[in-house]
Length: 229
Image 1 (tube, rainbow, N blue to C red):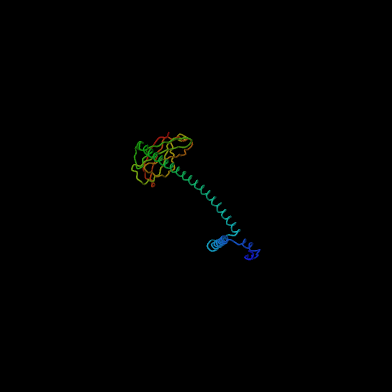
Image 2: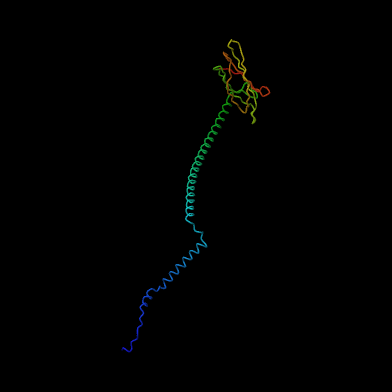
């Protein structure tokens, strides 16, 4: 038996070297990680936008905050403007409704006035311009008057005319006196209502008034004599 034994070489480092040998799977894993990291860097450097520095990032963030604040401010202003616009539109509609109602009222009053004027007794003297009615009230040293004038054949074009009043009465000394008013111009369409007042002399007591309607050249268009109350 001793003759068949083989010598065993003594190698104290063999077991230690085999213990530190790197496994293949670890090598593949590290290689894949390195390749992946390199690919990411390559994509970032070649295809993606450049990365920002810290200063640029802070500046970009500040610009974003300013833009967002401006957006919120404009949003608030837009809401206020929209509210004011809605209020203005509502007011405009209300005013339009009121205007429509006022126009309807004016038209109704115009028709009522025309009907009232038509119902007045005719001017006994006739004429191109008729004095359909008149009222004179003497008070406080003045003669207040209201005249209703109409045209016998009214056309679309108003007729220029001049009105003058001749007031007859007793003066302060007791004699008959006539006070002549300044003439005033007007235009007569289908009908015309004239209101005004005439100053009277002190102590003058009016009895009647002659209403003269003339054209601009002085030609008579109508006349009527009515008492003073």
